[in-house]
Amino acid sequence: MKVAVLRFPGTNCEFDTQYAFEKLGHTTELVWHESEQLPTDIDLVVVPGGFSYGDYLRSGSIARFSPVMKAVSVYANDGGKVLGICNGFQILTEAGLLPGALKRNNNLHFISKHQNLCVINNDNAFLNKCNKGEVLNIPIAHADGNYYIDDEGFKKIEANGQILLRYSDDKGEPVVVNGSVTSIAGVCNEAKNVFGLMPHPERALEAILGSEDGVRMLKGFEA
Amino acid sequence: MTAVVNVFLKDGVLDPQGKAAHHALDSLGFAGVDDVRIGKQIIIKLDTEDRAEAETEVKEMCETLLANTVIEDYTIEIN
Image 1 (cartoon, one colour):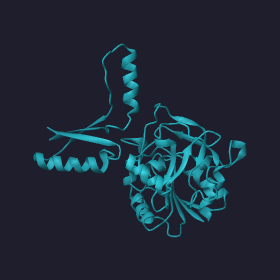
Image 2 (image 1 turned 135 degrees about the vertical axis):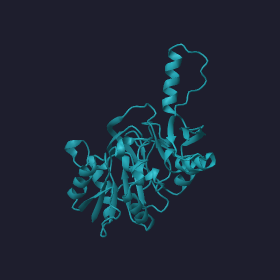
Image 3 (image 1 turned 135 degrees about the horizontal axis):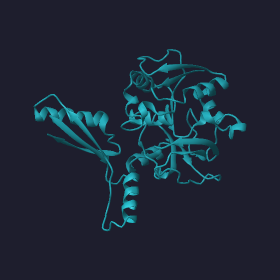
Image 4 (image 1 turned 30 degrees about the horizontal axis):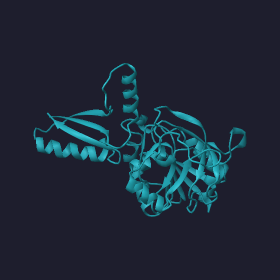
């Protein structure tokens, strides 16, 4: 599998993301935000975490107008797989490729810790190697992770199986971490080829660093 | 002309910063505060002298970039 990893001014998880996919045996290519095209032979685009454009105006609001994001929209609308992690999730919601929006955390703090997540839906290209109801331990590190969607939108994503993950306790019961609607930590689009989550699976690849649950998440894209 | 754009979270969308400031005002003894909303103000200098044109242009700026209409409302004042 070949993975394109985007890089904006202020991105800081691009090398971790490359490391993660290369550790799993894949090839990666960094793509600068000014690029108007994506590499032709890719299987996945990852919009990694960081603070693109210093989070000015709103997190992700400026990055989403980068030349490379036009190419990502075309790629996604053609059915190409796209994964947004943390700031990448914010960029994809700002771009309208994912439903909802991410607001400042309820407690106004930057939250950085390991967090349990419950797998809500796994019938998709991302979480197919995880079990429904399974609890995963994945680090989170964000200030704007408070997922918001209006009631109508919520009903739609719930009915269509677009809710991927919820913040939970070790039994899988939802917990309030940042104020997200029904504790949502990740969603996908209606066509289930664009995925976004606030937690960082690329930081959970080795037991010695606290968790290797990220491996099965990222390996989902191999199927 | 100058456009003053105010962007704030929609009614019904919880404003965590406004809520924190509200609590702070309460604890400082300012009684009778019903609600606090925190937004941002964006001031744009335009080279046109045509008010209608300015309004149309700034509205488009708001819809495209300055506000995220999933969670935010905006007002435009042209001077």
